Length: 73
Length: 444
Image 1: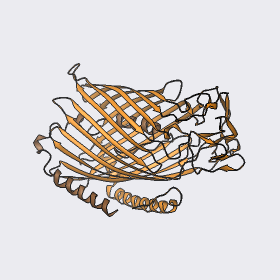
Image 2: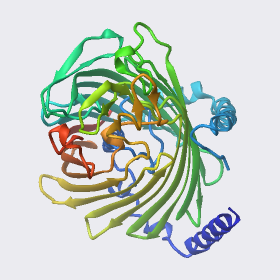
Image 3: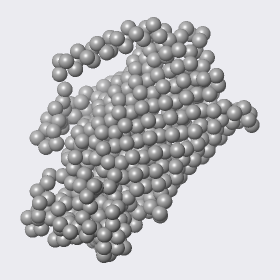
Image 4: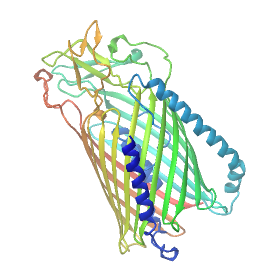
C-alpha cells in the first residue's frame, strides 16, 4: 500500500511539473476552441454510446458519470 | 481505503457508502443553497441569449427479431451572462423483442414458465432459448449546472432520474475542475451517488427452481452505487489535447438479473431434476477504470482516439479502443464525414456458469453448492466491434443536421467443452445490431 501511494505521489508530481512546460499561449487557442476539438463534441452521440454499451457489455464508465441508470444491466 | 469482499465486507461497505453518501449529500445541499437555484434558473429562462437544442431520434435494432429500441431525445443547453451553463435532457425509450434467458439449448423443445405465473413460452430443439416478450418503456430526465466557482475553478452539479415499469433510478453528482498553467492544465475530481429500485414482475428466488417462484406483489429490491472520478486534461500543443481519467465505482445491494435462469444438466448435457434455477450475483461490486483520450487537429481534420482499461471485483477485465476521424469535405457548405471504429474485449465473471452440473453444483431437493451463478452472456468472455459513419451538415444560423449509421457485432466465447447431449456447439448467442441516429441542432 505504501509503495502504491509513493508511486502515485511521484506520478502526480511528475505530471504536474511536466505539464507546466506544455501548452500554448492564449492567442494560440484557435484550434482548441473549435467544437470538433471538444473532448465530447456531441452530447447526443455520447449518450447513445453509453446506453448501447451499458446494456450489452459488462464494463462501463471511464469518460465521466453515467446518467440516470437503466434496468437493462 | 475501503475494503470490500462479496459477503463479509457488506456491512463495512454499506457503512462506507452511507458515510460517503451523507458527505456528498451534505456537500450538495450546501452547494444548492449557495447556488440560489431559483435565481439561476430565472437567469437562464429570462435571458435573451438563445438556447442550443439537440433533437435526436435513436433507433437500435438487433438481427433475428431480437431487441429493438427507439428513443426520441432532447438536449438543451444555455449559457447566461455569468458564464453559468445549464444543460437539460429528456429521453423516452421503448424497447421490445426477444432476450436470451440464460438457459442452454436442448435436442428437444423446452418450455419456460415466467415468474408470478405470467404465462410461458417454448423454445425449439437445438435453439438458444429467448424470452420473446421482452418489453419496456423508459423515461429518463437529467440536468446539470456548470458554473464558475472562484478563480480558475468551476463546479458542476447534476441530477438524473430514470423510470421504467420495473426499475427506478435517481442519481446526483458534483464535480470540481481547476485550471493551472495558463489554462493549459485542468485537474478535475468529483463523485456521484445513485439509488436504484428494482421491482420485477415476480421475483425469482436465487439458485432455486423457477417453478417454485412467489406470485403476486414482491418487495422492491435496492441498490446503491457510488462513483468517484479524478482526471487531468492537458493542452499538449496547439493541435493536441489529451485527457486522463481514473474512476472507482462501489455498489451494494441487488445486482441479480431477475429474468435470467441457469440450466441444471446431467453428465450427458440433458436438463434434469429442477431443470432451471434463478441466477444469483454478489451483492457488492467494485469497478475501477482508467481512460485516456487524445484529440489531434491535423490541417483540417480531427482524430479522436480513446483507450479504456477496466477491472471489477467480479473478475471481469476489459479493454476498449475507440477511434473517430472527422473528415472535412468542403462539400455542400461544410459537410463532414466521421468514420468510427470501436473494439472491445472482456473476460468472463468468476461466477459465469453457462450451466450447473447436477450433483456437484446443484442437487435437486438439496440446493446449490455454489454461492453465485449466472449464465447471462453479458458476463461471458466476449469481443465486440463497432463500425460506423456519421454525416454532419452545418446549416445557416448555427443549425446542423447529423445522420449516424453503425453496426455493432458481439461474439461470445463458447465453452471449450460442451456435453454432446446439448445437441449443438453454440450455447451462448452472438449479437448483431444496427444503430441509426438522426440529429438536428438549432438555436431557440
